[in-house]
Length: 498
Image 1 (cartoon, one colour):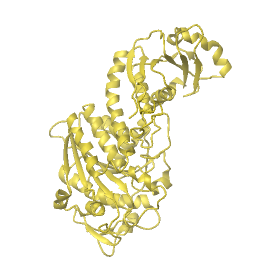
Image 2 (cartoon, helix red, strand yellow; image 1 turned 180 degrees about the horizontal axis):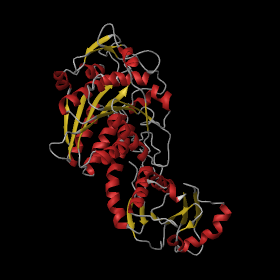
Image 3 (cartoon, helix red, strand yellow; image 1 turned 60 degrees about the vertical axis):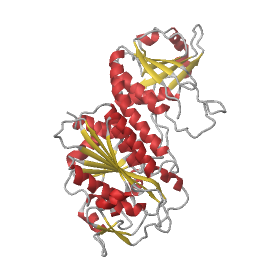
């Protein structure tokens, strides 16, 4: 992987070498701390010449400022100080990371004129730097930033100057646990399907035991004994065996019921016999974005020692085509005992989740279940790629998820459920069919899932537009975004920790 910057925090000082980044607020200019830096004197003339007004995330650079030993001075516009929330600080960090280039020694002066900048703000700035610095380049033999032998350049050493370095260090230790969970999810989504099948994904989940997560891996034989005909029907066309990873983090009171997260893990989706068109099929290595988010979340919660009992379950299959593959018209029996007529083998994710949700509910009886899945193209038609679809049978859970999405800017938009949609999946040959009519495809998929959750509070997040190939932003330029990790960590942190 790419080299990762190392980040330290220190009390304000005058940088003597390397690259120096200072923040400038709209209408306030530089802080006293920034002005105290000798290089800052070079900005007196540069600001008007460059017409720099400190608009949010704008950048102005002065190379080799006269009379100093530093390499360059970079000013990052912070916009209006009153508008800087946690996510804005992360975006400023991402803007810094995007401007690092080949810098090795980096100093960042955090102070803003007329603003109190504490440890939390500095920690969010650092988190943004790490998120934006990520790239997936493990298979490149010639690195973009190295030599022909594939050697990567040294990682940048970044010192962030803040009035509260101790507070920043403490806040960052908590924040970096979540960031590492996001980066794990990105790695999993970006990994090619020939190296990450169900067995390999399960092994990655098993590695979380080193953090104190209890991990069980169910094999095909074990799932067959449990009656998971819905999930196993999807996997039967692939020589790569299906798996289910059951992850438990017990950080709360022993008697407390857990909260549960369930992820769709189709490591590659050809569409089966209802085959997808060839154009763009390579993107279906990311059809396990829901499972990646759940795995990253479990790592984040364990790393920061979350005071909650949490279950993470991922159903792992490859939807392939051979003589054994499931056929349109086949009828399978789910773990719930309900029968499903499979009219379209490319509507496979809901078949995987049906058994995973039922197993989760039956075994753990959680306070709630949230499932994540790159489930339908229809949700992208409805919402584009800036919001994920939220479907829920519980208003309180829905509201808490929406609030967590606003706080992290992993935003959700609630979509409807109703009997009018539910009847569209009734089948004349089985208890239900796995597709409905032409319209409302994302809703119909959610209605299908609802038949496997009983009365347990439940939410379904359709992340097809946000987990892979989503538009880049200040903190993410990766094809696999890691969407859902920060969102769900915030949900647990704000509502379910002791």
